[in-house]
Amino acid sequence: MDSSTTLAMAMKEGYLCYALSFDYGQRHARELEAAARVARTLGATGHLVVSVDMRGIGGSALTDDINVPSGGTPEGEIPVTYVPARNTIFLSLALGWAEVLGAEDIFIGANAVDYSGYPDCRPEYLKAFEDMANLATKASVQGEMKFRVRAPLLKMTKAEIIRTGRKLGLDYDLTLSCYNPSEDGTPCGVCDSCIIRERGFKEADG
Amino acid sequence: MDSSTTLAMAMKEGYLCYALSFDYGQRHARELEAAARVARTLGATGHLVVSVDMRGIGGSALTDDINVPSGGTPEGEIPVTYVPARNTIFLSLALGWAEVLGAEDIFIGANAVDYSGYPDCRPEYLKAFEDMANLATKASVQGEMKFRVRAPLLKMTKAEIIRTGRKLGLDYDLTLSCYNPSEDGTPCGVCDSCIIRERGFKEADG
Image 1 (cartoon, chains in turn yellow, orange):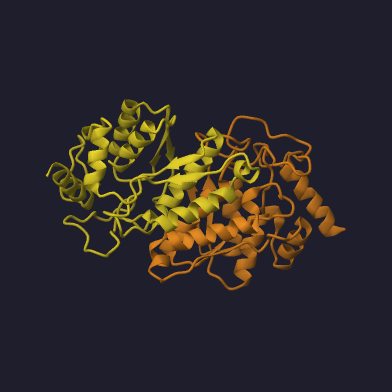
Image 2 (image 1 turned 135 degrees about the vertical axis):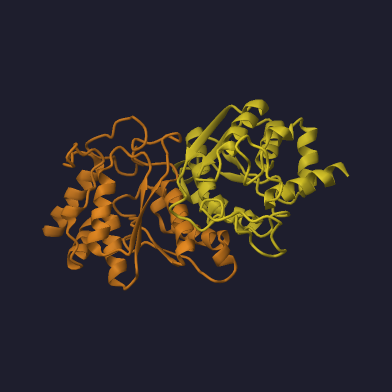
């Protein structure tokens, strides 16, 4: 939902968009199929899937064989679905591709409201990444490119995100949020991600 | 050479070391075999190889099917073996593993003297990464860990690196620097990396 809405917003701003997905040992491939569908439908110029095996690193319900809990995470706690350094790893790979493409703007669907527990969804983190990125690459150091990390959803609620996407014509049936879908892609309805999604739709419609 | 010497130095400082290598679509697997050999010989507590497919990203002689030039890179130019955002990607994966292990010190064999063309081997870059890392992770944000990026070779010449490693008992015959070794692991002798290595040994012995 978040990545798809972010893509729709970037397209609306007139960018030629290159969508980047990660096969990182998450528990199902349905998410990648959904990503390809969304990128195609929204008219992204390219879509690349980078494989990065984060299972050896461990430390998360999304990459280890531990269970994704149902029923939500208590307020103020970081969920077990936290993946160590995930956004840093994803943004780093995006940075490498951005340099090759000559793309200065890196969009990420980070959202600090519903996922306030994730440290790598906070504005101060994203700013620090941007500063580092501009010291990291040949193109930026030679003054040819200046990278910006754009997180347009950062301060939006899930309901606001959904309303924004709908206005831009995004069909959320194409997207998948569930951490534990069945074989045919049906969401479980009980994981954190399903709960946050359902609450978002209720609020957007209410 | 650089990674191996860095490991030897960290071991000497008394750290329990977890060695991390990357299978990133570089042109040969000999480098990974050499890394495993070195980690074992020096007594690293663990050795993890993370696969990350950087071929889709492109932009480098090391990951694309373009030729690695022989004869060296002109002074002041960034070599074609530059891989976009490589150290950022590697350090990000190291950061994720470090958080899981509870390891605060991330050692990297970056060297600013012989590879002064690489932007991600400069002290200001490494400092920016460290700042970002301490905003990126659950353990650092909760005050349980403070990450340090340590690059003990940063201002050493290749000759100084070799002398340091030898003093620590490192057998450089175990290591491999060549970008283009033959099937049996024999170095080509003409790529940038071979030239820098050979010059280093001459200086160290001279």
